[in-house]
Image 1 (tube, rainbow, N blue to C red):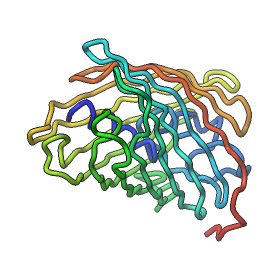
Image 2: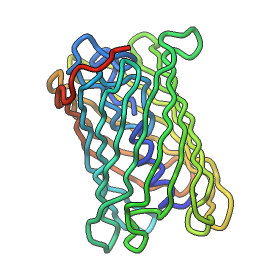
Image 3: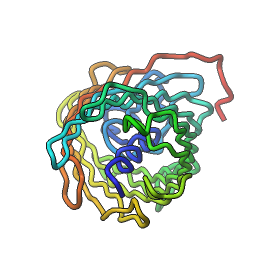
Length: 274
């Protein structure tokens, strides 16, 4: 998978694309009793099976700096708007600004997805959800802020707790338009994310994620990376995060990030809670 492809796969999964806070600090597996309690999907690649309360809006944003093997730096601002549609359904809209190396800041590709939680507390899968999504070619291929393809993805999500540790497992598949000369037409991803409390509002998150090898003219070898960092629940409606991403296998960039998740409150009339 090419570097540009991996980057946009991560942004697409930000719609799904993360179980960053321990469930002991903010409930993730189900809509919380307080609808304004944040349910961060930052900062991990993985997502959890939880959804925002119906009619409520949550905003996730941050700044990430990627450094490749040539020590070239790229800056992105991955942002996701999450709107609760029903008790088990959530709309996600991904909007990202990108500043590639030696290029001006520009708009990236826009993503849309709907997360639908199918089970809660199942014996094997725990809270299980599916996330179909679509990425539109709104970015620029000339400036390397987009892939120039329309992508259709499906992500399977399993979330459960092991004592104080929250566990989220994801597996996804993406099919792209185009002839495969610039980015592979098919790509997959897997993630295993863990989070837990440290003390009070301070928590931790760690994740191992990978992009299996792809085929075709734009194909590349498999990559695996490790993400880790602290999380902080500043307010019930505001969570902060920071951390690093380091490569384990393959041509994965070194990255560091900071971000926030903010519950903006109810923005739509009371919706059907079923």
